[in-house]
Image: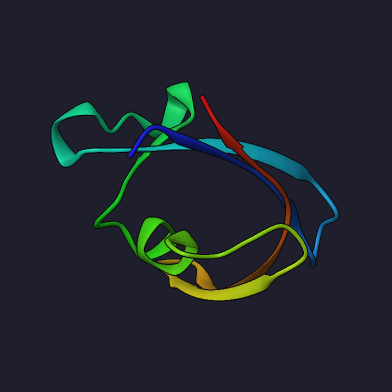
Length: 71
């Protein structure tokens, strides 16, 4: 928990930054995702350079992990 992950959406090439937090602290608009969310679960244990595929309500999305920051 508390890890910040910088991602690139491989379809849109948009950069995204999320902090993985507990369920009670999650606020997607503030860049905080729950460790139990589909994206949060996919990111746990991953490192810079890894790619993840996530099933979202809008369909399957692929992300490249650019950086993992422990703060």
